[in-house]
Amino acid sequence: MVAISVKPAFIVGVLTLSLVLAVLLLSSPTSPFYRTPLFLNSPMSKLDIWSVGRMVDWRPCKWWLQGHLTALPSKSNGFIRVDCYGGLNQMRRDLCDGVGIARLLNATLVLPKFEVAAYWNESSGFADVFDVDYFIQQLNGFIKVVKELPSEISSKEPVHVDCSKRKGQFDYIESVLPALLEHHYISITPAMSQRRDRYPQYAKASLCQACYSALRLTKSLEKAASELLEAIPKPFLSLHLRFEPDMVAYSQCAYPYVSPSSIEAIEAARGDRKPWTGELAQIWRKRGKCPLTPNETAFILQALSIPTNTNIYLAAGDGLMEIEGLTSVYTNVVTKSSLLSGEDFKSMHGNTKAALDYYVSINSDSYIATYFGNMDKMVAAMRAFKGLYKTLFLSRRAFAEFTSQGLSGKELMEALWKAHRDDFVMGKGSALPDCFCEFKL
Image (cartoon, rainbow, N blue to C red; front, side, top):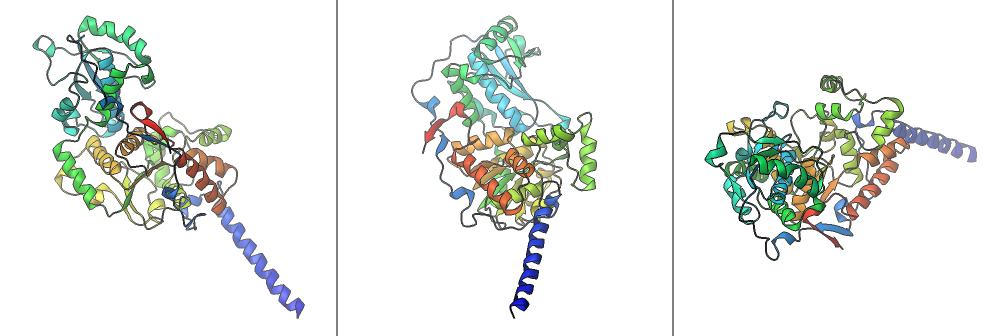
């Protein structure tokens, strides 16, 4: 009798072990696990990531509105036009910086120029996206803004001053101010590496007011954005997912397990930017340089105990690849194109479409980004400004590190939970410090 009872138990044990090994192999970092979604119970299914208490927050103290503003000098040193390039949120960042620089140099600000870019499918200018009169009104007292130039210089193009290697207050004053005084009308594109911490308070105040109080969408665009927000099932998570061919190509990461059509699209976008191979590819990936696929994103969301029936607004551009990897797990996913129709929406270009995503994201119940780009930084900061703190950036570095260690299945989920919990607790990436105050909770 004993022998008979032991044998089935042994067989059951072997079968169980085999099944466990099969799951582990399917979810290993060297296999395309993200093409076969795993519906696993997260390690802390009773506690989602938003339930975790925070220790640090960047909050809007609006220091630049307290006390008296430094009076504007009676005479301006000339006119500055900020030339903005790239996507909407990169241009928005450049404009904010440009306002601070113009105030630093005691210049009058001309309405910015949004560069027409075929790469971004773009043709809309500043006035097509933002309310010009509101912009001028909100900056009153911080910096002088004009719609039109004086007749003596209105027919001239500004002298462009290269700021690509300028850093901080002293370089702008020493290198850009002389050109402004000589030509009286210049254009600049702010340097990404500038040091705002060296700005005097009045210049920082102008930057903060421009970024967080002066940029309001045009009435027609805000109406469309409001209608879109109203159409989204509530409550909802706004997910900024980046996995377009050009972005993947730019990352120089290899994705051999995606579909043939995705591989073809990536290769067509690569140009001279060939993917890293061998050990360099592993180092690059572990540094967090490789975009998360939609299926990897779904896996991490499950690890964070985000329910699979969550309403998700997909804030993404055209050409997103492998989307089935997300929608096969999270089935309540909507996009602007699925909710809006009509000629007005069809006529929109890159900037105006990006403005819709931005508006929805700063008003969503929660916001998660798979990247830490210009839009994500601006959205996180504006959400903090509005007192919305359910904001999180998924860690590509943590995902790459854990999968390279051979973690998979529930063990990988547990590690991802802890890594993102620690980031959320410390308020990592939740706002831009220039215009916020740090609060210990």
